[in-house]
Length: 111
Length: 237
Image 1 (cartoon, each protein chain N blue to C red):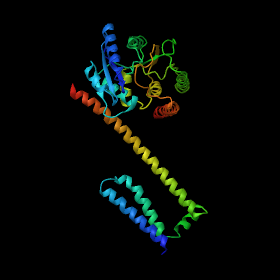
Image 2 (image 1 turned 60 degrees about the vertical axis):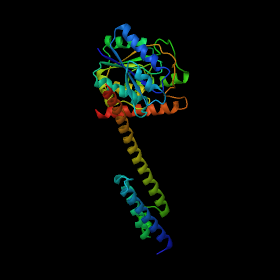
Image 3 (image 1 turned 135 degrees about the horizontal axis):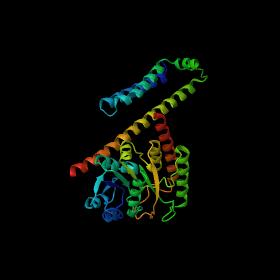
Image 4 (image 1 turned 30 degrees about the vertical axis):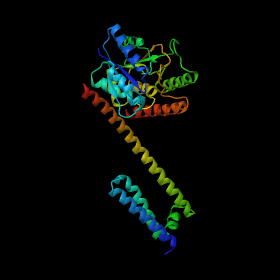
C-alpha cells in the first residue's frame, strides 16, 4: 500500500462519516445525501483498486486517465448543480403559494 | 356587478392614499361597485399602517414576492370572493383612476375578456423614455410573431380582466415582470384581448420594478419566459 492510497482512503472515510453525522443530526435530508454517499464510495473504491482508473479509461477510450477523472468530476458537479436549481425553483413556488395563502388568511381572520 | 381594483404596493407610503381615494371617488361619481384591494408586498416603509386605515381590503404579504406574486394574491382574493371584474392599478399613481370606466365600458361593449390600457394609441400623456419605448416595441413584435395579435403597450400594468380570466390567473400567473408574458398566456388560452387608449402620468412616488441597469436582464428574462410559456401551452394541447 502506498502513502497516497492511505491518505485517499482515510480522507474518503472521514468524509463519509461526516455525511452520516449530518444526516443523523437532521441537517441533511436523506434524498440529498445519496449523491454524496455514492461519490464517496466511488472514491474509496478507486483508492483500493489502484489500476482501476487505467482500466476504466481504456474501456471508454480515454488515453490519459487523469482526464477521465476531470471530465467525470465536472460532469457530476454540473448534474448536481442542476438538481439543486430544480430544488430551489420548487421551493420558490411553494414559498410564493404559502405567502399568498397567509396574506389571504390574515385578511379572512380580521373580517 | 362587482369590480375589484387591485393595487400592488411596495414602499408606496407617499402615493398610496391618493391612489385608493381617487378610485373610491370615481366609483362614487360613476355609481360603480368597486372594492379596492391593496396588496402590500412586504413594504419596508409605513405602507402597511397607512392602508389599514383606508377604506380598502389590505392584503399584507409576509415576504416580498415581486409584482407578479403580489398581483396574483389580489386575483386570488377577487376570484374567491366572487368579483366579476378585476382591474390592476399600480400603487405609484401612474394610472389615473378616471380611466377605469373606459376599461369597464370597453369590456362590456365588445365582450372582451382582457382590456389593456395603452399609452401609445393616441400618443397623449406620459410616453415613457426612448429606451423603454424600444423595449415595448420589441415585445409588440414578439407577440405578433408568436400569437399573431398586436398589443401596442404590452408592458402596461393598467388592465382589466373578467371572471373567466380571473380563474386562469389564480392558477398560474408569471412571477417577475408579468405583463408581457401574461398577454401570451391570455391569447393562447383563447381569451379576447382589447386595448383602449388611456393617459398615464409619471410615477408620483416609489421606484420602478425595472431599473435601467437591469433592463437588459428584463428583456432577456421576459423573452425566455414568453417563449417557454408559448411552448408549454402549445404542447400541452
